[in-house]
Length: 330
Ligand code: SF4
Image (cartoon, rainbow, N blue to C red; front, side, top):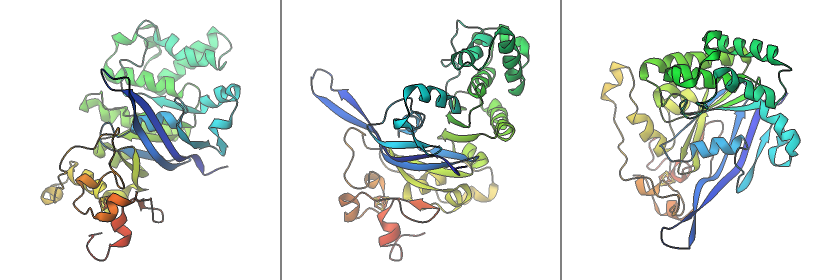
């Protein structure tokens, strides 16, 4: 069995954008040469500011949108080379939990029909009786009674709706689930319940998660590894405790320094405030895309794109390797 469940190599996604009142089309580079591996059975968190390309990257991994270039290898197979019919069967293994439980469930369908849809499409249930049995079991797994099956999405709270979304994601017994900011539309009071449910299901069903989030307090709680994205590029990846306690990239340092920590001893820690806004993905800077906001920027940063370097815990920053003894405080 392959330890790496999924590999992304140099994934790029461009979207054409039209300027208002002009026929000229420009390119928005949402994902810019991102590579990572997802190991079987882990929770890999993908963090970064809103709009940095995390969700687009998640969709590329699941082949929901085609990449402009690069490839995704799932369990040793290149997704681009799998025939469409086989790809449909492959989709059972890769599912997604969406950010907004309000818009991801069809308001005109009863819960039983929402859950039955993937079962029917993938012939995972032979008749209505099997559908009823499987859907009742799914509701039980996400902590809801089977009486909820006859109701419509608007009859539930946000947390319950997200549980229904999770039930749909596990209906086909997947191996990998991309959780795309699954907590951000929920009240703080019910986030912990949904996190605990995701952790229990991972154990029970031997799942692997790519957990997309901008909330470091959640990521801190559940990740095995953490991957940091900035303007479509992956800038750091490593074990969760290494990244959180010894971040390498200046962007990761600022993210972590500004995240709240429920520890009175951490109250006096230094906060690194980033100046300015992230640059536009339509007109990204040359070299390192973080350089306009980086206090360590040097001429090399404008000239060359930094590559990911290191063993295990890696980051894309010139000064980590070139000048680390001279000025960069590791
Ligand atoms: S490559 Fe240069 S600009 Fe980019 S993060 Fe490193 S020091 Fe800063």
